[in-house]
Image (cartoon, rainbow, N blue to C red):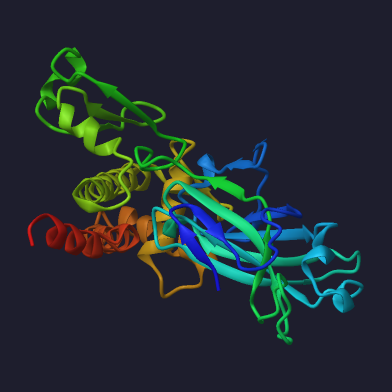
Length: 334
């Protein structure tokens, strides 16, 4: 049992605190190895934020002073278990897996989670616990599951909410009233400029509440609900527009490949396809979408409206708009 006072935690037995070494051996996104720049214990995942599944191959080395927290007769062969845990305070993201002893004495395993379940910073740590119970001893952890130590956290830093459609799109604040090219959209909160390459999502600096809402760091309550709903609405709108632009410029080639009018079009279509056609295996979804787009082009646009409806539904599911609206309506109105 442990007791706590605010952020400080006290254990009724010898606890080693943060100890041992947790190493990220490999990071994979949607099954593909990804090289992420390192900054101490922080990994920047900004350019892969819009993808889905993250898998971390981890290696944990027990601290040399672990035997001091164990009964004397267990110090040569520690009776402990090691688990890897991923969590984020701002969301309900929780994921864990057991690490097993490797050939070199370290504990290894793979931990996974979905990027969509996270928002900003995911903390990953190794937790060492007793594996078996034994008779009580003073100042020694003897209950099964008692925490002996935790590793220093490894942090995965994700995108801030203002980046709604990946690293290929720029997001900029401007005064719509003062910018001649944006004056036609004065009074609107945002405008997606598709004529720019890459596209630019302009946010209206004339609306001070908009910046306040989008930059809010609230974890709960009305500010968080309003920020999340607005962000999801912006993202849904942006992805739908990006799809229309990308679908217009894709063409099939004689050799069975596809050409894209702009460099980012394939990326947009791939992401949209994942969510528009969930009934197909993930690797086939882009081909299904491209075939549907090509057929619509060949038939003078017939079938394109139905395809667009499927895409809109898929993006709405992706952004989880129904749940976001329900949470916001209950929190802001109810």
